[in-house]
Length: 361
Image 1 (cartoon, rainbow, N blue to C red):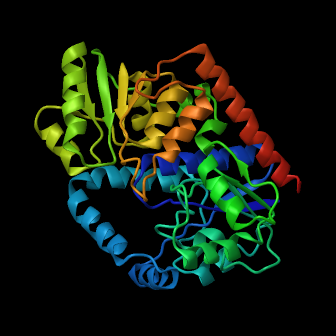
Image 2: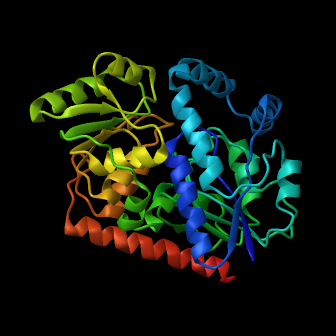
């Protein structure tokens, strides 16, 4: 039996690729073949989707701006591309729904997840299998809406229509599950499942990680957002504890910090994991940065990227993570026996749900 899977594979993000790897490895361990449908839309397909879904044109412009601003990170993006091609089982690149349909022809199950592939902000029907023939069995594992509610009626209607045929649905946050239960009151069993990275044990992640050859203790900074206060906090923490400041070159501000004397982290995903595993402390605004620090037993401080009143706030991801870990706070989160027990509980919960879906339950 073969599962054809879809998620973000080309957005230049460590967490996206590593959660994809974790989900594929788990499906393989559960006795199925597993292959990612390598969705690689070109500019024309992206524009058509923007018009079909009613997304804001600013999303396309923002993507272009990020590519221009991120030219300093070309080496990092090359390493991520290399990991995708050598570590994942992939179809040939699919530029359209028709190509996805052809690539998935021999799949017994279509499985989407995880990451924010169901975000109503950048809605894309490809990640809901709208292109698939109606007889194809489909399921969703820990998809994230990112937001707490679906504000646009036309988008809510599209999502309702696309999700209705799914045999099994799980999302990553309780806020997303609540929104979908309101949208699809007739659909039973919309579950909340942990991100795929939690399907692997600490030992399994450490086997993949490549620790840096560095003697001094470091503060590892991994920021997705661009905010000056992040760097004020980072420099103050590093100075207070005598830590070496180590930075992942994702934003222009991070590259400026490296030019100003901070150390650039390893660029391969295995090295990124190793930086988290070997750090004295991790400072991040990233869900996956926080998730891996917890998984690898590294002290952690999370900075919230969004204002709580922002209608596009994605803070629910971190709130769900805190709840899943049974933690009083993520600022800081220190390793504990309670956290380790929560991690094992999450791993078992996710694997049991997936096993049930693969068995046809």
